Length: 485
Image (cartoon, rainbow, N blue to C red; front, side):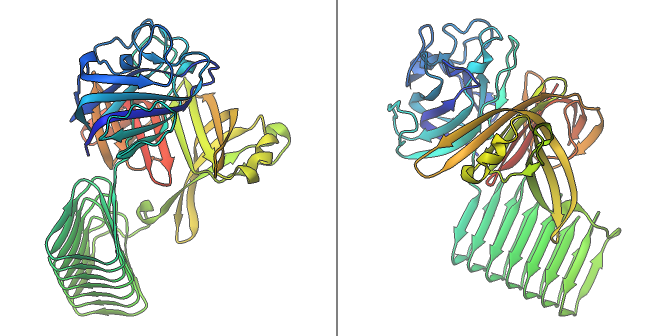
């Protein structure tokens, strides 16, 4: 998905432990993997403050060097201003882009702790000039609200591709379509009543979800490569089909199909009752299950071999634990709203978690100042945890309390240098591929429980050694990016 913006606004909450500055070395915009060149005459830029020798526009001029001295090559706040800074680019003519690549602040590889950390990016069709941090932005859309990576401690270009927020959901009650409804690459549909008299289809990378009460189909419902259909009642006189990589789940009470219900290669069907006068079929690699208290079949039911359990239909959970052994305390599992991590082999791994309920958990954190921060990934199937593994572990180094008008949160940050044993691993469900200066990056719709830096990853036709993993997990989004060494 591409964005069009007259103004791009960066609200920078803080930097990496610096006491004087927030800075950004460069911000580049891309469209279809082509750099959108920016020169001084294309835009007018503003900032809450700017240090001598830097200017707001210097962060956006694409011809400036991303290495060497910072002077005249970046934006840096005026000391002492390590928090609550706004940087704005107002384009003379609106620009279109689908990707943002940043290099965080550094000065010949040093002073990287002055780099911006927690940043919100907002675009607007208006010319925005208010440099007050977090001030309202008219006619706007938030496209990023997460963490910028700290620049590595070396005088090199250190690109970070930001995971931008894109709309994926259409909600309606009721929803009626008498013509075809289609989407590419990702769409989720939810309706109190969903009625289709022709066809609904999606060509997707991450998933298509259709949920309705009830769902009536007289045309066809299809998804490629992933489809999930859930409804209290499904009535299909046409076809429900999915050609899928990950899984197709059809759940209904009741399910009535007089046409064809099919999935390839994985399908699970659950219903009470299930009535089929046509054909129910699944060609499967891992699982093919049909459960129903009342099962009526006047057509055919078939499934390929083998039929065994898979994680395809398991729910994925993330658990955060703060250990207490170093402080004579028990480990404590704390609910979090999101976490971000950049993981490398042989270099410091950075992890940041946000705890939304500061009142409940502040005393537990205070009692464990020498604890380790652990993120576990788990698969839960039919109420049971079937697998749980620690995917990230760092030492707690910073505790920050943030208090707004309504919410109070705690942010925990930590670092740890760890070396992983290399292995080969094949990955699926890449939702984005990028190649810059011959280095490949892939973005996966879900983190992989086994992948570590140093592994040799095969993604489609690409095979490469993984230099770093970047995790972005929240209620709204769960992605993992892997970058080639």
